[in-house]
Amino acid sequence: MPRSRQKLFLALFPLVVVAAQLVMRATATEYCLTQLTMAVYYAIVVMGLCLLMGYAGQVSLGHGAFFAIGGYTSAVLTTHDFSVVKGTAWGGALEGAHLLVTKQDLYGHTALSVSPWAAFAAAMLITFVIALLIGYPALRLRGHYLAMATLGFALIVSKMLLGSAVTGSADGIHGVPEWKLLPGLSVTGKSALRVQNYYIACGLALLLLLVLRNLLESRVGRALLAIHDRETAANAMGINTAAYKLKVFVLSALLAAMAGVFFTHYTGGIAPSEAGALKSVRYVALAAAGGMANLWGVTVVSIALNYFSLRGWFGTYDNAVFGAILILIISLAPEGPLKPLGLWLRRLAGNRDTERRPQHGAP
Amino acid sequence: MALLEVSGVRRAFGGLVAVDGVSLAVNAGQIKGVIGPNGAGKTTLFNIISGLLKPDAGQITFKGRVISGLKPYQIACAGVSRTFQNPSLFLQMNVLENVMVGRHSRARWGFFGCGLRWPGQPREERAIGEAALAQLDYVGLADLADRPAGALPFGQRRMVELARALATEPEMLLLDEPASGLNTREKEDLGVLIRKIRDRGITILLVEHDMAVVMGLSDDITVLHNGRPIAQGAPQAVQNDPRVVSVYLGEDFQGDGEGWEALPGRPAGPTPTCCSR
Image (tube, rainbow over all chains, first blue to last red; front, side):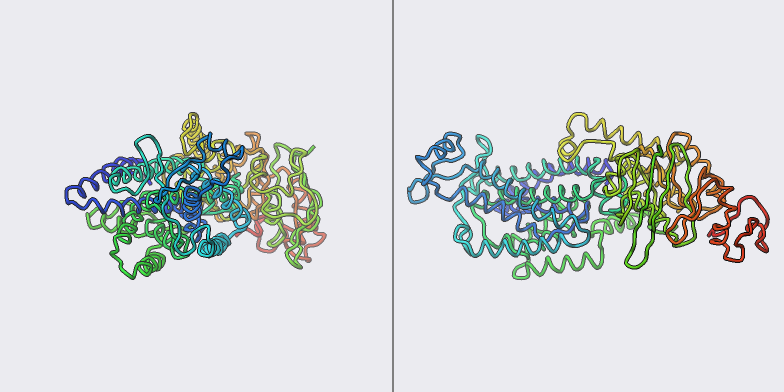
């Protein structure tokens, strides 16, 4: 995407975010911000997929599982009672370092749990290790091995979450405490802090968009595109393709897990459906609908579609809608609907000759 | 000592032995040609040298260091760059970005530095762009920098690929049939350019079908046939080698040193052009 348009989007994003909130306040529908906030967190997963699939050309069907690993790690650590370590030397040390905090649950019992920041760090670390373990063997091979490996991984994770008492089986985990990011700024589902949390989510998304844009407009971004296009030539030009594929996979997994942690603190809990294969396929569909290698398109489309989905617009056809989107995009507009739509609009506007590029492959 | 030494390299695909005990040496500052009929194993040899294929046996050393068994990107970093028989540009990028990819191994900022625009990273990025533009200018395509790579005609893709290979700052350049698909005019320009590159101090190993090009350019030629080297020497000597003549023209010409000129209907001349497409 041209730099000028990148800048335009970058300036437009905060404006649209603020405008959306003001419109909702004016129309007394500010309760909808809850779903919008959740949709923004989901969009962060898709941003990671944009890098992995759109740029590096590697398909993952397991990003729902990484989202869940982030969320569950955080949820388990911040709700589980670790009182047994009280009195031991290292338990005291952890408490002294504020990694373990005492809190009161609903019934007045005191419990010793991991602080949200420490839980966040643990979630990132665990995701990092798991992504490395899956990515390392799968990405040394060419083709769709990563898609297969991640699909299997997602199924295993979802079954494990369903079957394990620690993760609350089919009920998942609830009662996740608020996460005080900074004094006066906390990720929580309290309705009084709804607007604040909307801006936290959008701020995080904007920050990540900036970082990812920097990344894609650099040597790293070109290397990823080169791998997608012609892996052999990329390797012959000095790019360590296996390492780059692994790094971008781990990065996208970390983004998904980060979204999962924020999401879990925001909604106060997490359920095993987040790890389901259908969720992972949904992320892929959203990335495809946004145009894959189009960071802004992917972000906007996934916020919008997830918002509609969370508001219940698609009713019982929810998963079917995303499946249909995936099929339609792949068969009709593999580059995503935004580019052909843009061309069509421009053609309607009359200047036919812009953007008309000769086709590939003709010598 | 030779810059690149290939000794006893063998590679089989199933029952077909594509390269069978090839040894050759390329001296620094040379233009070395590798010729041979279709299926002689030239491209396989290239792929082995550049690391895309692993040899079953034998060893390759570059500047005295064993490079056989290394990954292609490691060989590129060691200073051996290549072009492909079919120009393999990155079609999702524009021409300049393609050449900028060639600078990859000469730059250092990774995921963190690039994502956070660490101090120094934007400067490096600008330097990459400038160096790439300089290489494009060198091959005469600087004014096409913003064009999408897929929009270029075949001959220009070749040149962009050459610029991309040069951007890696190689000490040695492997050119896989650089003249194929080019017209007469483009071939002449290519010859001039290849000599210019050699004069810059870059050693060149050339696989070529076009006899006029290869005979005119090379200082030294190795002829492959069925995966084996059958002759080696200066262009004139190789041209008159009876084994070479028989391989190219058939048994009838065996032992006849004047084989090229003796071919009925072929105009006499110093540079035979058999096997050109």
